[in-house]
Image (tube, rainbow, N blue to C red; front, side, top):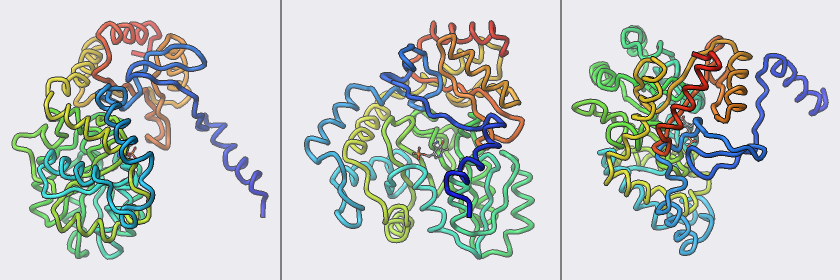
Length: 383
Ligand code: PMP
């Protein structure tokens, strides 16, 4: 057998050659739009902290108070030490916001998806997954070991075809999609998906990680539709629009009871720290009372696309597809040299030939900052 170090170096070598080795650079952040790398101040357009809650005084104070009252960590899994009182309160608030009977917290969005899917479906069952679904939905589907069919992105006809051909061979079927697609920023046609799921006896699960706080007056992508479609499995994360950390599932009481009894990534991992839960509660207070503030990230994204003559955004995520990885990374570097932090997204996060600059907008961005960014993009010949 090769030594471990040689194995790792050999595995990395082709990735280095293709420009796909990743570096995690030290970056100081003190507000959604502000960052510093190697002592240089940068305007950040790559953070998912859409509402600038990670630095909101009320959110930070709630986290500090929770540490003082309940301590820095949860101590163990919820099934061992029990919930600290904030967890039950947050579950109740999330269920109310999402219009479901109950909710269940996980320790991250990733852990939620790899726990939820295998708890609901297994090897005899079938999953229909949008091809652009987030990596952790794919990971959850792999863990479930169900037969998985990938349908073309947001293509209802393709999904219908796959369901008609394959649904009958399996006792249970689950359709899985992002609500807001994380690398493209578009919304799933949730109204039509909900109808198709109903008509074809499939369960529907959405990952609305990028919807809560910013779409549908803050209530998530389901509320971008009138009337909001019925979605029995609404997953999300507290790490983006909520500005904290953690994942959740909003669903009926029997489904949530099953999760708490069977979802391995809930049972066998330590509960969220009290500070994270308290921060999320404080963020929800603001979301529920200030729907106008929740619209700002999307308005800022629209200002950006209008300035560059790009199609109107559906969410605060705006990709500019460049294509080749090396060119994308060069553009990201040039933008950084011009004072803007914008991430180049490359394979395998996106498919080969679709590397892109991914811009995310927050309520904290000022119009003049966005104008400075669009000036730079034009000057560098990116658009
Ligand atoms: N789903 C989607 C669509 C995401 O973008 C992410 C985060 N990148 C996750 C799930 C995972 O959430 P978390 O960061 O809370 O693990």
